[in-house]
Length: 260
Ligand code: NDP
Image 1 (spheres, rainbow, N blue to C red):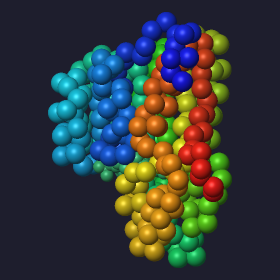
Image 2 (cartoon, rainbow, N blue to C red):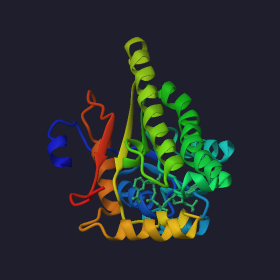
Image 3 (cartoon, rainbow, N blue to C red):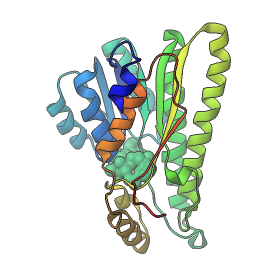
């Protein structure tokens, strides 16, 4: 996939990236994929021990920074560190997310708030933190992880689905606003949503309602030929390496045998 695209690219991506939610799953895999090619990487998550240990395996150009995406200042801090250390930000990967699923009828308001604050506001904070720098540079890539749940609604997952629909819609709107501006100032900031189906990760651990957690794990693990976090890291790599005149708005990826 990448090699085909790169027949048309000048060179492989070699920039500075920020990744939220890099302590496990897709974020960790994206960090591992980008690190050998990156000038610099800033990786954020709440579990600082995990990202410190990951960074120690990836090189001195990978900086682990404690970050709760529910906190605007934390997200801004990731960008400050990237600019202070590397002088630029070429890619923002808004990956951090949780999925505390349960039937709406249970009115788990705290779960709803956490889901919105992490999955939706966290992405908005990422966009707001990085955009001024990218507008000044007139270049950059903003990649946000939505989900198949950002295109459909699944029972017991209404609020999660709403946040993932929101991520997709916000990215599309941002892309439109940037394209309009690009006609005037020539910026080549690209915006992409990646919408995966089931990927085997620790995501079910973020479910606080035990029966829903069991169901989520069961669904995730009954996929015949599941996707791995590495598959999504390859998608990010593909997006970063598209020719300069090509913008991938959305990439939907799912296991071949996923039947829901
Ligand atoms: P994981 O649970 O393995 O990873 C989630 C990551 O998000 C962790 O690194 C976690 O780090 C981080 N995170 C959660 N809350 C916060 C927070 N408040 N601040 C900062 N970081 C946070 O799951 P995945 O890798 O599967 O999830 C990555 C993304 O992919 C999510 O947005 C998820 O919704 C999406 N997705 C997942 C699918 C799947 O089937 N697995 C399918 C489609 C989309 P820490 O706890 O250390 O802060």
